[in-house]
Length: 373
Image 1 (tube, one colour):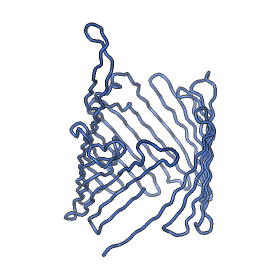
Image 2 (cartoon, one colour; image 1 turned 90 degrees about the vertical axis):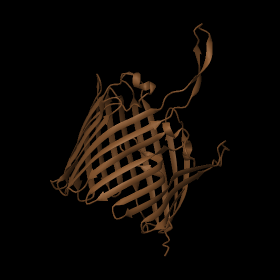
Image 3 (cartoon, rainbow, N blue to C red; image 1 turned 120 degrees about the horizontal axis):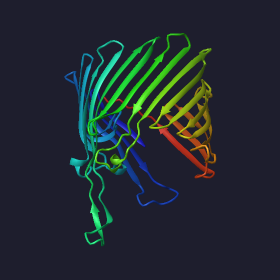
Image 4 (cartoon, rainbow, N blue to C red; image 1 turned 180 degrees about the vertical axis):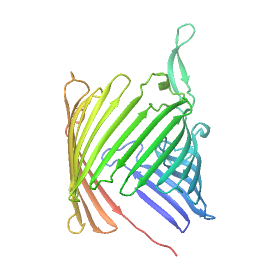
C-alpha cells in the first residue's frame, strides 16, 4: 500500500494505492491494483473556498465511502457549506469510470454552523444511486412453458435528509442528537441521542438512546418485507482510579417489534492494556464473552510486543446448543528509526466453521516526507 501526497501550500495531489498478489496460490485476477484515492485538493481559494477533483473519500453518516467526482466547499466565519457530485467507484477500485453514470451517481450537501461557542449544528442531504446487475432467470410464458428471461432492475437509491446537534463543554460534559429522514419511504429512519456528564471528579456518566428503521434501498426487493423497528437504551458509568485505571460498567435494553434483549458490559482500561466482559441475553440470543489486549513499548519504543485473547460462548435461543469461539493474536512492532517500522503478527481462530485456523501477517511501514522549494 502506498499513500502519497505531493504539493505545496494550498495545492496538493493526494493518493492512496494498493497492489495485492497471492504468492501461495495463483489467482485469476493476480496482480490486482486498487486505487482508493487520487484527487487534486485545492484549499483557501480567495480565503473562503476549497475544491476537490478526482477519486476522493466521502464522510457521511448515511452513505459514505469513495466516489469519482467533485466537492466544492465554502467556509466563512464559522459557517461551512459543502456540495458534492460524482459517480460510484467500480468494483475492486479499478482506475476507470463506472458504466451507466446516470444510474450510479451520488450528490449531496451539508451546511454546518460552528459560530456558536460549545455548539455544532449541521443539516445534510444525500442522494445515492446504485445500478443493479442484469441476470437471466427461468420464467413461464403465457402457455406455461419455461423460457429464459433477462431481468433488468431499476437503479436502487438512498435519499435522506439529516440533522445533527452537538454540545461540548470542558469539565462538564457533552451531548449529541442526530435525526435521519428517508425521503423515498417518507418515514423517520433514525433518531439518536447520546450524552456524557463528567463534572464530578474521576466519574463519568453516559446515556444513549436510538430509534432505528432498517435502511433499505428504494426499488429493492427487500422493501416489500415488513421489518420491525428497534429501540435501544444504554446507560453506563466509568470511574478513574489513581489516574491510571478506568473501571467501566454499562447496561443496555433493546426493544424489537414484539421482543426484548439485554446487554451487560464490564471492563477495565489501563496503560498496560484492557480487559472486557460482556453478556447478552433475551431475544437476540445468549452470549458470554471475555477479551483482553495488552501492548507495552520497550527500550524507548524500539520494540512493542502485543498480545490479545478472546473467548466467546453463544447460542441463538435457550434450547440451542452452545457454540464456542477462541481467538488469539500475538505480535511485535520493531522501530529502529522514527520513519521505519516492521510488524509481525500471528493469529489463531477456532470455532465450528474455522477449526484451528492459523495466519501470519508481516508489514513494513516507511514514512517519507520531502519538502520541495
